[in-house]
Length: 438
Image (cartoon, rainbow, N blue to C red; front, side):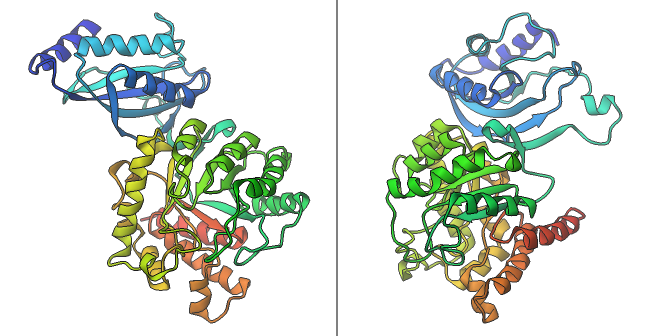
């Protein structure tokens, strides 16, 4: 449809409202040049400065190029912005934002661009534009070249759908509940990381602070002394190329320095409640952020006041949802957030089993954007599994973990955090083959 006709249609919608009325507008965002995710972040920041407040986010997608095929894939998303700008003023604003981020006017149609901002709907009025069929349809394929992704820094876009994923646990601690003290050197850490990756781990979670009930509280300095040498070694190990590195911490300073050392994402068991600077630091880091539910701290989480629930699934979802809203307000886009219900953290055995059985209820108790974002669950070797089977032996708990992992996948989990990647990999293979048929 010609641009003048499109503007005419949007202008008619605009004239029905006064200039002071705020309207919701859907804007499509795309990029396939330069640092694509940084381009996204910069564009949304500039829109905010021009009276366009983002109020809803889609998932983040990687899509194959259409029509002009000799170019990189695109990073795509859609956002709802609330603005008082008229259609004409909004279109001008979008073009100015594109230009400020390096988009050249009159470039190749359907070609590469650092940023692409398009009005899709203006207060319920669509652009009515007609596009040719997508590339997958043109080629007669039975699938569309699109996948949901997380921005994983130097690793690029990390696809989190299609199969279940494993986060291998790498504790650099003397007092973790099942494997404390087993890794006492950087060399041992690298060897264990390689074993986890060979056994199927897609990412490695490096932790220097034990979070078992009643664990001693480490300072950020002590935690950094433990984890930084390990993260640097993992990041430079060719055998671990393509494996994401996570820093397991609730200290903002540790998160920042770990990412600078090579970590690709931050795993925060407190969901941002133990360090007031965490949200702003993670917002600036532009990495994925795992937000886990926990009441209190590791030292207090199992106190009766923190383990009392009427309905664990909905309460955990609502409480974590409130923290997610605070994180988004601080600048962490929902498409960077991974949720975690916190199995074993401020929950008794009954609540742990109820959460595993009701993960979908937990998911849909979250704010709307997060209901369709990735979820991580960590039942690995938790005491409630050993208590159920009458043994705290790791081999026994690993078998129980495999069963719990399959149940979590059935409940819509996407990532399982595990000590024994091999046994969980086998369980997830069966779960994926089964539930992809449903």
